[in-house]
Amino acid sequence: MTLAFDPAKLTLPVRHHIGGQYVPAREEIAVTAPSSGVTLGAVPRADASVVDRAVEAARTALQTSGWGRAAPRDRLRALHRWADLLEEEAPALARLEAVCSSRPVSDTVAGDIPVTAEQIRFFAEFADKECDALAPTAEGSLGMITSEPHGVVGAITPWNFPISMAGWKLGPALAAGNAVVLKPSEMTPFSALYMAELSVRAGLPAGLINVVLGDGPDTGTAITGHPGIDKISFTGSTRAGAAIMENVARTGIKPMTLELGGKSPMIVFEDADLDLAAECLERGILPNAGQFCVAGSRMIVARGVADALAERLTERFNRHEPAATWDAQSGFCPIISEVQLGRIDSLVRAACEQGAEALCGAARFDREGSYYQPTILANPTPDNPAVTEEIFGPVATFQTFETEEEAIAMAAHPTYGLCSGIFTRDLARALRVSRQIEAGTVWINRYGRSRDHILPTGGWKASGLGKDLGREAYTANRRTKSVLAAI
Ligand code: NAD
Image 1 (cartoon, rainbow, N blue to C red):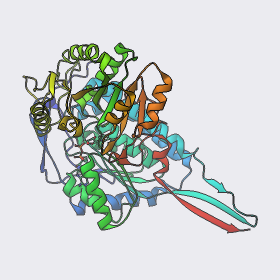
Image 2: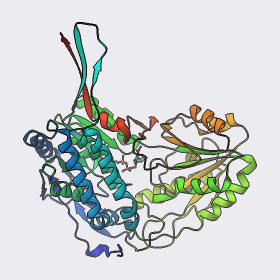
Image 3: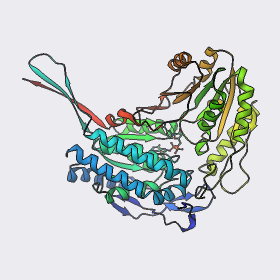
Image 4: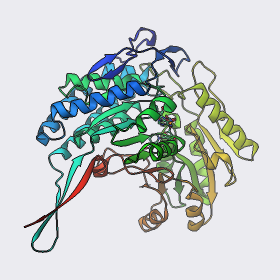
């Protein structure tokens, strides 16, 4: 079966999904296919009244279904049915994803969808296995630390992995007994709507997942400032994360999880397996054309092996051929928009003007659509914008070092601390360096997440607050209560 499709022939849902039904609204925000530059249509922009309606639907669903109070195993079973249906419907879901995003349709079917389904199952398992605690109090009293769902979670997701990011929010929130009002990115709205539709078909209470469409300043702000939203779960830029904190501080304090930007280093020591390092460094920056939060966008390489590694990397980077996200054979991914491509190009130009040397790329591909060539910028100074700014494209800097201390100092970023990679055959050194890296994740002799969903992911410093995945993501979706009884 080929998954290739004609984007002009795809029927797109362009309505909000509230209370288990599609709700028509005026179409306002243009959605464009990055693979071709063709405008696909326009989606509505939910205002405060639409968000009100979604929050009301969520609260009603919680009350009438008893989702958060019923036997936890019932939640588990319903979530498993939904995960199964997501996989069964993978071809349709993947087309809705690929038409407007940077995700190739076949990669989505092979990766994003099954992994998301498995993560939903993973979180469902917490529902009837995660126990509350008895506290060691003095004789004559019984102390319990119990937990309860927050109520309605407001989730806001980015465009770079729309299905996966929606799954990261919905899985733990629902398993923990909450309802959700989800706003996907205005650039990639379609797959989240179909996920909500499938949840109702799988037997989840209508209104448990509500999807409202719109942009950040209007719809996003209406969600984060809504008094009926009990917790915020956000993934996106550090700039938007800061705006959300400000809005929450102004409109009413509520807990929040923020997964934000990064500028992650990959350090290659002289004793590293260079073939492995070249493969991992390429995989650390080029998937999804570098548009992923944990992208290893700063290569920091021991001077003794720098020339050999640069040669291998340049050869690998020059091999990539772009393809439309709807082609049967997946290829190098497009940049999400012309605006984003322009930003990447101007940062690369500024980096070169300030002394960086382009070993490859540094230009768009000469074809239709928004495609940028894999780019390595060698020997930038520490204050070069390519070293300091999150570029969110297929662009990595290449810096060299002499000593371990120098490598650690170069790896530190003044604001970001999302993750990092270390390549060496010396395990003692790897562990010693990993303790000195200021980041939420360290990968040793590999780069990128595995399918071990128990490992939490999230940033230090301006890269975020709280965690997605892991037990932390589940517990963040419940609030604890200390109960002390005299006995
Ligand atoms: P973005 O911040 O522009 O938008 C993300 C989402 O937030 C969108 O739905 C947008 O409409 C909404 N939004 C924007 N401003 C808002 C506001 N003031 N209030 C409420 N909502 C608002 O980010 P993007 O360009 O879609 O995604 C790229 C960014 O996301 C990068 O910085 C990347 O590093 C980050 N990201 C982080 C992780 C992680 O796990 N740390 C994962 C994926 C992406």
